[in-house]
Length: 89
Image (cartoon, helix red, strand yellow):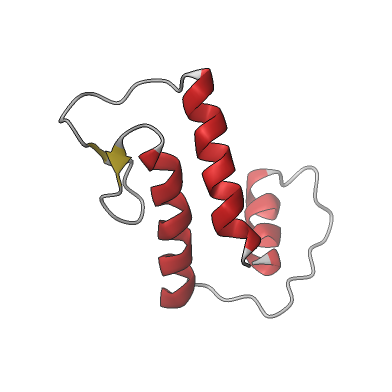
């Protein structure tokens, strides 16, 4: 994913980047990586009682409510869950 990050920084901050060297990058995220990223996204959304509705979507509330900002408790729970999921990679 380092190559993808290089592409993203070069396009988002063109005045900051003079040159990028993207090694083994691809123009499209692989299906395997999309599944991994969806899993991480699901752990963060679960802390807010939301479930994922697919790549590129915010998600939907379990109880049908509206999206709202994070409480401090949700932030901590979400980041701890994210860390557990990401640690395996």
